[in-house]
Amino acid sequence: MDEKFDTADKKVLVDIVKLAQKRGLKGEFGDWKEFLNSHDKKFGAGLSDPSKRSHEVLAAFLKTFSKEDDLKFFDNIMRHHSNQYLLEQMKDNSHISPYQNRV
Image 1 (cartoon, rainbow, N blue to C red):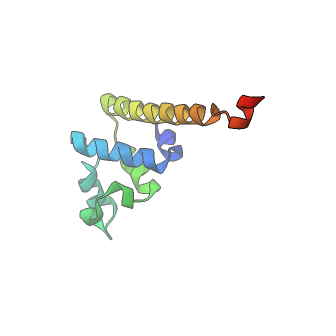
Image 2: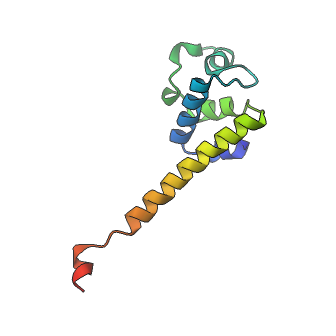
């Protein structure tokens, strides 16, 4: 799962962290704000909006989770994002220009 976090789009990681916050999920270093307090002494939890954090910090937080249920939840979110991306690609590729309709 760790390498999935490393290669995931930042938007996906932000979404996962926000959902983890809503569910009150805690990794090895606690919840998101507790993680920030121990991981980032400069800003701590004062800047807790996940979208304002780097890809590396988001991935580091998500890598602190080890419970099977949490990992399945994260995997489902990543799969959902991947499916959405594929649907968008298919939609974009299926457009036929007006010129093609006349031929």
